[in-house]
Image (cartoon, rainbow, N blue to C red):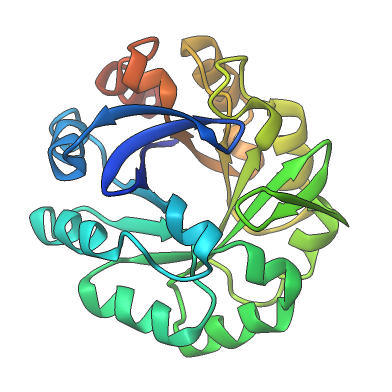
Length: 243
């Protein structure tokens, strides 16, 4: 199972939020590139970047920082989400060396848009499903829709989506444990690989996810846990590889 460090970008800094609230921010570094170097040196095989400002603005805001990270580590696949609402933005990121673009809000509002992107950029599109109590949230998690996470995921079954990043908003940044049950429920409902996100706190979470890895969960995104030291990324990846 792939363990993917998260680098959340706000105002050019590397931060973590609690439950997606922009007013509940912890700044971990003024240099996202240096933070990326830390995780790469610890053995990260992919990086998960989020343009938090972009998620609310509906367009890239921290794209220069994203480009700097990609240029610094061209051998490491990077996936980026936040504010990607048109094909031109996807093209610009791919041209810059980003490997995967994550579509969130627009996937809920216009599912056909995801299909178009998968056809235009095969192998490069990931859908980000952020849910609260099983319902999909959009607009930087500010709005909760009536669509269930499973229903949304199933709409993309034949689209050619590379993966689905499933985030439990209620647990994100709260260090309360990953929602294995809901993540597994989603993974078993589709043939698309699922990446767990939100609440991964310690090795017990890694062990729980590894225990069900054969059922469609390909990886997990690690945020506050690796920043606060409750998970050692290098040791956790070694454990996951051994499983």
